[in-house]
Image (cartoon, rainbow over all chains, first blue to last red; front, side, top):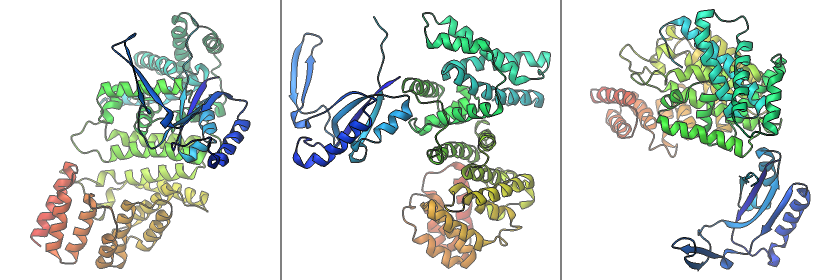
Length: 117
Length: 414
């Protein structure tokens, strides 16, 4: 069965803060309901904790790390789920159950399966 | 979609394309691969167009095409080396050669193909292009010409679409009952856009553009065949037939557009009107609680189609249909058309008052033109000239511009 990553894009919030408890309960409920198809995932700390890394001048060049996310936007990447679904419609229906779908947006992308080497 | 002058050839091309899409629909299910199925059917249709003029059309054209396409698909699958699992399975499925599928299965194959090509995760222009390529059987070059998109761009768009269908695993299935109304509106929007592209084509354009009307009507007939009870489908087909019934009367001998009010109604196609009116009735019986936008628009078109003259139009009925339409589809353009009807029923001043309160149409030439026509009838020629000039200052096609210029001249001499 194909796998998809559902990226959640939401307001840039600290999901460990007590005022997010209600939303986290909703995520827990999602986790239980979709347990059979969730293959992995994570929630992320806010973008204030992000570091963007680049290497200048090709492989082995200078490492340049800078504060903050790559792109400054109102809705930020706040987490992801790896889902195993029967097809895209299944993945869309599952993503629509994520609180991020009504708090922000969820981007669903298929995972590449590379041939064994 | 070559348009050969030879009618026998045209009929043959038509037959091969119609049967070809049915063969394609089944082959996509069997192989699970739209690109492969399309390549195989394309090959089969080319062979048919070569062979049949010599040998005559076989007694079972679809079976002939199915067999040819299956053979080609097997060749293509075998040619690709290092194939395992699923592909081997597909070859074995193809080898069975079970072309005797039940009619329900063939119907569902067609539905699956329609809904896959119009999946909401594909962009709207992509859906439109796929519909022409896959559901109507036009070549990529023809799709590009019909939609005024350069061939290279169209090739890229169609290739990406098929890649997306494959990599994201857009399912090849009929939507569940609860999804169907929404998904069907998506399909209807694609078909209606094709119709309007063709309907708005002007003289001198590539003949493939006006031919889009025919393609859209054929697609709507196909939808009606596979989903006979759906109000949107009944409404869509009715609306297109009723609009198309005026085809011959829409343009004067010089190619200039003739407004509905001034058309020679003897030139309207009575057969299309009769068919459209029956479909409107069926559509209305099937949507008692919430009016379907296509059915209501078709009902308005039917009011016009059944009126012996513009003056004798049942404006009360037209206005009540506009009220129903606004309840489900409130757009400035619908309000504009309603205001014109108000003008006919309650007088020019009432119509003008309605027009003036519609927000957001300052950039729409037909709003200025509608105001101008009412002002002219109210003998306010100065204001009418200003309004015509405002309409002419906005971007529009040459035919409309020429029409409005003549109206401005008329206002100047009024």
